[in-house]
Image 1 (cartoon, helix red, strand yellow):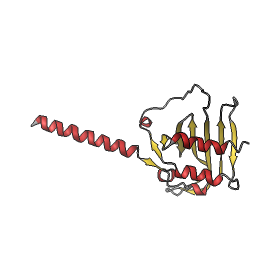
Image 2 (cartoon, rainbow, N blue to C red):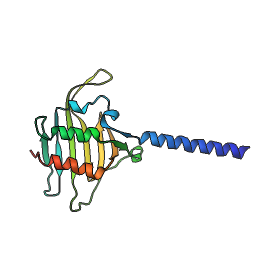
Image 3 (tube, one colour):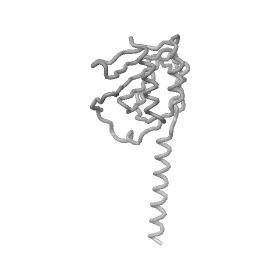
Image 4 (cartoon, rainbow, N blue to C red):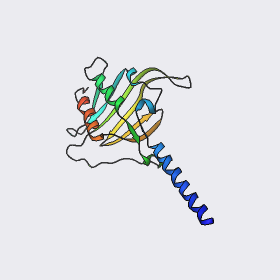
Length: 168
């Protein structure tokens, strides 16, 4: 009887752990993950990129009247971000040995008068998304989440193809 109870306990523990992992890593859009943010209310997109053609990063700004502004919003609205399990461990600094064709970008979405559930108002660059050579991090409300995106390689290239058209 003890062996059977132990086996049941182990099976239940494994099931609970699997359910927790699936819930933690479930794919979410930005607006599902951060309900206070409506990307269609973004007032400016800016950041920087490095495509390996120079040592320094290049700043970019995409205003609402720019032809690709809505396309950028749609790229980020339609992306589904899956939280990686490595978030449960402490994160150190990142390094990368550059290879031909590598690129990185950092995109900030600016908002005005965002009402948070606690009644506070937010303004400025509230959402940051960092592509560090294929490693994607979301930053919002002081928290960082490492994620992956469905069809990530193509999605990262699609974002890069737009931002390189708007150097400051």
